[in-house]
Image (cartoon, rainbow, N blue to C red; front, top):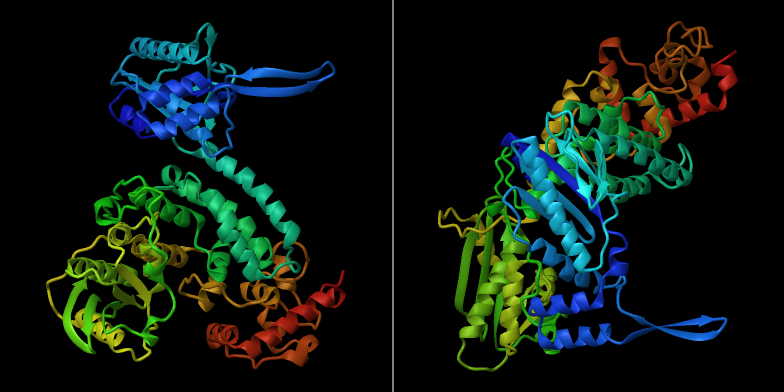
Length: 624
């Protein structure tokens, strides 16, 4: 997408060709894998293992004429652990071709995308067909075939007719939208096709959702919310980093429409209930804002792109490590890590670390204790945006550095009251760079041992380190140890921004005002209401005034004789519900009455019984 947008911003015509390789993993030649293994300078031991696996392979088949043996010279399982890596070795030779500056080739497994750019139609035609010729040569050298039936291209240009694109003698078809890696990319880059696809997918998901959760039966509302957040919302988040980084008003409305069906399924409310009100009641922000938050997180932490609107720079945030920094055969000794309470039998000399966060800041510290005396200490103040986990890791890292400088090689124990810190530091695959450094230090110094200690149990060393960390956190020092912000802080920061935007849209909305009177401030915590309470407080329930409003009943009058009655009538004065009445408020105090009743558990119980009574006696309250 970057290449396409870059080409369009430069005023060029852009072609994006999506190529499909026929049976890529099934037809990959074994000798091509072996040749590319040698070119990639893979370690000889791994190279020999893979060569032995791929050479002299036989396939035995039982036929009517007996057992038949055939040589297997191609193919690797797509779902295997090594299959994608072996395929990448072969396709890497295509990516390493010296392409023209206006040609960009990208691959994800066996899906290829070729992007060409030119200021003229003829130049685009020549450039594209030259690039296709190189791909043809590569495919033929590896006995692979491109499926011209499944290969298509998009044109980003004001030109009406696109230049012809051929694979050998077959013309590749032009489309206006193509599904690639689960995302519909269109030739206008407005993502309308992808939103329509999400809408269709939402209908199927909602139908499956309703199979286990009806309006008034099935799993509880808390489980429905959990399913929505962990399954449904994650499905929609796929590809949000490009489609929802700055959603338009039209996309936001469409996403609200997609989200609405799930809000109704979770709450059991009437289908005419305001979407904005349901979002507030269930603690679910508008889907557009949620996907925008996911897009910013992905762009900053993974793609390392700045977010200019919020003034967020990727260099200010931690970058997770992706590769091992030690050989898999190297590991810590069993006695180097202990998660049992080490404060019960402490050694005469040890190092204690701690991190603390207060309203004034964050502090990290360690104390070296010998014979119940502090003989050395270290402490530092961190930015207020730092997390306790970062402070704990930093203190542990400094303690390990101190332990490495001790001249004697006798075992030295480092105590910390944070289990997560120990587990991260002992994990060779930890993505945190400080934890990875600690692991490497422990690997090279087996005499250093990490031990968990129970916090606030009166252990002198732990209490000393804790006091030092808190003191530094509360200090007014301007000498602050700079540290990159964590992903947890980024999520917290974006959550505040999301809440502000959600609050603004809630205040500006023209629907759901009865709920706005009860809940003026948005929150991520859902209300503890039953379905009957949803129907009463939203005023979209089994009431004659509601049915008359939507042309279902000819009259809004109550069966008791009262004329044009709101839902408040049934809770305060209707003779048909007198067993559950609540004191009627003055007309100017009705808004306060609704807020107080909604906040009172006993009052809500009466409301619940009233609505149940109305539902169970339809003939009485809705006479034909």
